[in-house]
Length: 108
Image (cartoon, rainbow, N blue to C red):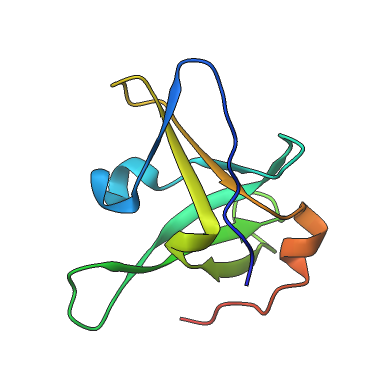
């Protein structure tokens, strides 16, 4: 399990996974601790009761989704930030691209 990053960016606030829709998050770039692109959000997995988000899916590597390694992280392993009250979202994980590629692949 990864630990949740605690990034700080001027003009951005940390929000929780239940403060936006899955469509807003889909395709958002994920950044590692060094602020480098490590992948993109590729959907959400809901809990059995369909009330809460159980996992956030990420495509790591590949090109246009081809050859990407898909991983699933819990909301507790991810920091989501929004610029003010706008729609500009950033997602952070406490892992590099190679560390995420070493995670077990998520199979739907």
